Structures are given as structure tokens and as C-alpha cells.
Image (cartoon, rainbow, N blue to C red; front, side, top):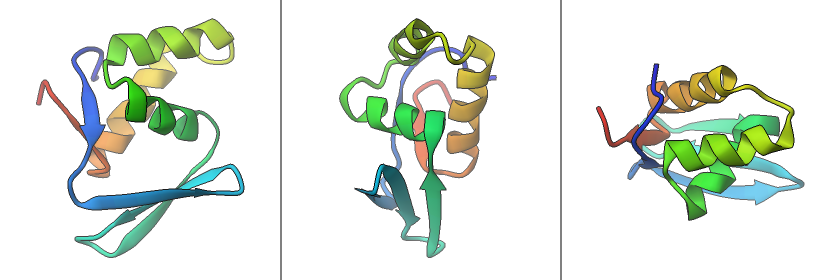
Length: 88
């Protein structure tokens, strides 16, 4: 499980926000991903702060999610090649 380091947007994606939802387009495989809820929150945080510890701290303050779920979502974004982890 990814629990430290940093994450950055992958080079092969473009994205935009419409009606409070984030749409991410993988330009290599020509597939669109819809991010809502905490996935969207994590995505938007990465734009300004890509340290996993900082992302976790910000989201834990909300009290709506635990750290294991945050790590699972980040790992899912890495598996889908939407973000890259500096520790991989």
C-alpha cells in the first residue's frame, strides 16, 4: 500500500471539472475516468500539494474518511496510471 512519498499527475492525461465532478482523460488508452467524492478531493489536492502525508492530513481533518481509505484511493489512481508515485 502506498503510504508515503509524493504523487503527481501522469503525463498521459488531461482533465477538467464540470458540475463539481472531475473528468480525467487518458490520452494513451482513450478512456475517460469520472472522479467524485473523496477521489475528486484527492485529485484536486494533488494539484497544489502532492505529498501523501499532507494529502492525508488535510482529509483526516474533515473526519469523513480514515487514512487507510485515502491510501487505497491513491493506490487505485496509481494503478489506473492517472498519477505517479515517487516511491515506485
